[in-house]
Image (cartoon, rainbow, N blue to C red):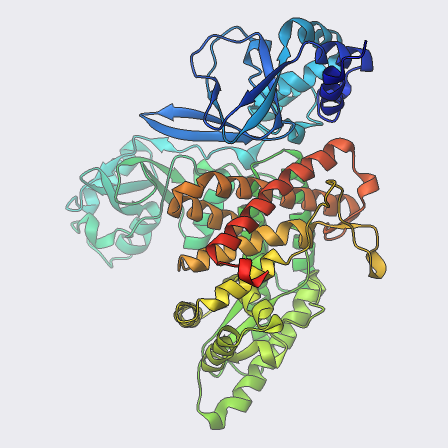
Length: 637
């Protein structure tokens, strides 16, 4: 007699790893013994420190929240949804659970009996390696660790000292300090005796300045200051600070950015907290030529476009290395985006040298779109703009012509390096995108107060901007004007939200991928338009709704939204995770196919990859539903 319930369970399990690695009869044997749990929201499957169960679990429907409680504060580790496994601890060790597992919504959970599953996993090397790696890496969505191999290779990756790029920078703990009133002579003697190259000037155990060997040479040995001078007379202040978690690339970039050779390590990363140590340039190991700091030095020394193009190719190799090493994805975004910024800035500097005269007035260059959000990993289309200071009307034409000519040079220069021209001509070489501050303000007032399809699209692009070069105050003045106009016309945000709701869905009614049906890209899936943009657009609108300035990165926006709306924290965290998964997937596809990665041939994907994508789509519908309620869009649908 057929067991229809067991058949349904087997049909479900066979779609998800590691069950898809089992034979049909093995899967059937497990399915006949599965424990089916129907749980309301807020029910615990297990708690921290409880004894291990005789099952591990997989979510059939709903979601399960994994969390820790520290000092009565709940820290959510992850949210498991359809097809995610959790509670593997009894399979690996008989120690008590380390996390709480609580249903985040009404859920159906399958308990997989260890008594039957464990012998099967022991005899199946792929299943065993998969489960051990998943357990060791402490990752909720086990599909993302597919391909890491066995646990020994995973541990080797995590502990390999050659992984310069993900190591925290080693710093000197218990640094030698002095007071502001200490004399230069006393400082020099102490530095000589202690064999150190810098002395931190501290007050109440907090760093207020720093004196280096270079300061003694340039300020004292030259006779500018006497050896009886006090520390406060020659110290560099304020100091550059960071937390203990600063990585080697981040430290290199910070030193280059602030033209310093030392960083003070403090308890909370600011000068207002206790000094924990000091990090010097000497402490940082100089790595291979594709090290971020070395690349930035090369960029700043580059004289020709071919040099920058070569460096840009090195950045692409660096990105591939980072992905292969499975660095934390936000870390990859930060490093690659910072390098892109320096490349663009250097290009502007070199083009300015080719102009016959200096700029007639102050100006600022902005990157827009993905680079403006610091999310451009693969070289893609240029989106940029130029703002110049207001001038009398009689001077406007010649001033604009100067900056258009400069922009033409820069845009062409960037194209030579590898940044494609924008097909829609949203570049500073276009007079519409090269204008005075007052004209930009007026343009945005028109877009916001009289929203139409083109206006909302163009303005939303401009809300994602990054200052690159020039007078930053011009950018800030425009930003203040934008927020003032938006606050006076809330309907504009509703119009933006309506556009997000109208975005095409990534999957159809039967959870099949929706592919393109027109044009030259028929039968391919557009991950950018159908999956990434709804998450990007929603984060932008909600951050504008809260009137938060200077928050242009999608991950940072969702992090800030989770702080501002704790009642929606789980949703915003889910959106951030989905965005990371989708952008990483797009980047990997772009590297494989040597393109932008936005158009994906579904036939080239494995079943696991397709399932991974579909899981990441879930928050899209949820964030769209929030927008419908927040902006009262039902009447507009």
